Image (tube, rainbow, N blue to C red; front, side):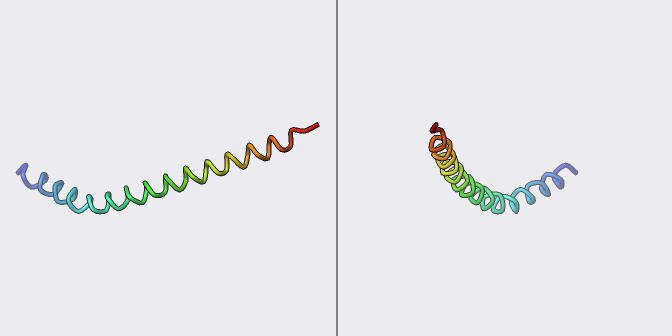
Length: 55
């Protein structure tokens, strides 16, 4: 009785792992691109702020 649900869980996990792997890869790429874009936005923000600090 207990082996069937465990088999179903193992089957679901086995089919989910490739999808999770591709999702993790996409998430990693999105994180790197998002971090780089955030860094560029921060640099632009500071350039604009310090350029407008004059008297």
